[in-house]
Amino acid sequence: AQKVTQAQTEISVVEKEDVTLDCVYETRDTTYYLFWYKQPPSGELVFLIRRNSFDEQNEISGRYSWNFQKSTSSFNFTITASQVVDSAVYFCALSEAGGTYKYIFGTGTRLKVLA
Amino acid sequence: NAGVTQTPKFRVLKTGQSMTLLCAQDMNHEYMYWYRQDPGMGLRLIHYSVGEGTTAKGEVPDGYNVSRLKKQNFLLGLESAAPSQTSVYFCASKNRDTALSYEQYFGPGTRLTVT
Image (tube, each protein chain N blue to C red):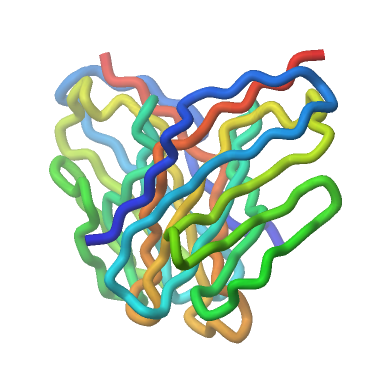
C-alpha cells in the first residue's frame, strides 16, 4: 500500500532562518512521482515541484530546494532564508505511474514564519 | 483559460439535505478527481474519473455519488448530508498525456458545513 508521512505537524521559525520539511513515502511501485504543494491561508493549492522516481537529482528554485533520496524513501523540502510569505501548509504527495495517477497526500506541515 | 472552477464556493446544509458540487475544467483533461480536506488529515480521494462516462471509488467514497456525463464536468453529489461531511472539497484534473504534465491541477475549493 502507498503511504506518505509528514511527521512534522507544525513548525515555527523566525524570518531568515532555514527550515526543512520532511516527507517519507512508502510504495511498492518502481516508477512513481512525488509532489509538493503549498496551501497559503487563502486556501488554494499551489503546485511547487514534481520529481520522478528515476530522477534523483536534487533541485533548487530560488530559495526552495528539494532533496530526493530513494535509499531512505524521502523527499524533503528546504526553504532558505524563510520569509513571512512562506507561512502556509505544505503537502507532500505520491502518485502511481500509469493508470489513474491518483494522489496519496501526507497530512501536511503547517509552517509559521515569524517576523 | 479559467483552469479548474468549482461551484459553489461556500454552502451550509442541514442534516439530511442534498446538494451537488460542480467541477468544471477547460483544459480538455481526461482525468478528474474529488478530494476532501479535513484538519490533520490532509486531502483524501473521494471519487475519480479517467474519462467521460467513467467513475471509480477512491479512499472515502461512502455518502457520495459522482457523475461525468461531459468530459469537462465532474459532479459530486451528497444525497443526505451528515455533519461528518463538513469539509473543504477540492476538485482536480489531469492530462492523460504525461508528456504534457504529470501534476494535477486543483480548483479553489468548496467549503461545506453541515449542521
